[in-house]
Image (cartoon, rainbow, N blue to C red; front, top):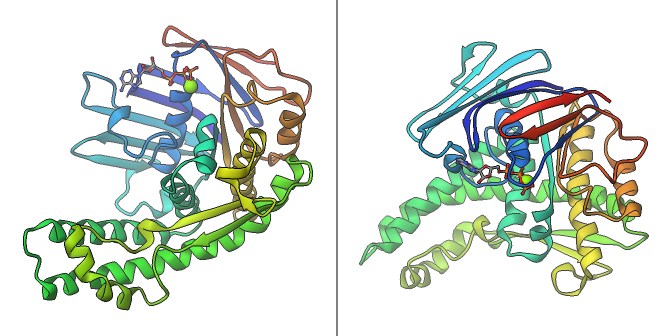
Length: 350
Ligand SMILES: Nc1ncnc2c1ncn2[C@@H]1O[C@H](COP(=O)(O)OP(=O)(O)OP(=O)(O)O)[C@@H](O)[C@H]1O
Ligand SMILES: [Mg+2]
């Protein structure tokens, strides 16, 4: 469990500290008071990445150059310093070069209203969903993803030059194929494991509708041969047209593509099911239940879906729940309330 959290120059906060309990913790405040920011800081501390943004640069407080987040997790002190030039990570006061030990301590699932983008939007948020899960369950995932992204950047840069030479292109394709293959295999395995869990979760909150997940690779089985075949086309378009950066996660409700055919409510349910599946996968795969960051969604759900969701959340998980008000709160979700106003937190136990 995350016992406490300290922020310095993180988004709207110059300096703030919070303490959390097991089970439910409610963070309440008006719009723009920093509720999402507090959840983000917890995610950044535990996973060294944000659940809301692709990069950490926007989290540095305006006018500052760096931020620090720190806190105790499972009795260990975690500290993370970030600036555009340098990142420093410490575990129990000792600076870490290898992040494996640090990152294996805790897992995070984020529930937020923009989870709907997973259903409605382009493929990018679905790939990010898979990547966020993959890097939390498999220590090889993050390095493979980074290696692939690097190789892709290099190949694309070469393709942007006026006359890329085929021989040079072929040489740069090799690392792309190696990293791309292992990334593709890991994503496919992940979807195979997530599928049944997501279907069950959807069933539990979706009144019997069937949600089906399928991995759609952005390249053919023989990625290397395909890259060679499309090389002239890539040179003409100045970009790499095939590979895991074009992967997708196909979602169907009742056998039809969820983005075009599912109703608003069905899409919301499917988005929740994907996140619940993530939480259940973590709960099954690892000793410690994941930290759940639940941003603004309980207030938005109707009572029946809210209760179904509450019942489906892993019991053992610690939960940080934000809301502008707690009117909706019913029995079964007791916990301390942290009131956020004017850059300060006031805690009320209850
Ligand atoms: N890098 C930054 N520097 C300074 N302030 C920032 C930075 N990034 C965001 N903010 C400000 O932080 C404040 C808190 O944002 P946050 O999204 O956490 O609010 P919130 O309480 O979740 O609001 P809502 O209820 O509308 O979701 C906002 O006023 C925002 O403008
Ligand atoms: Mg918010």
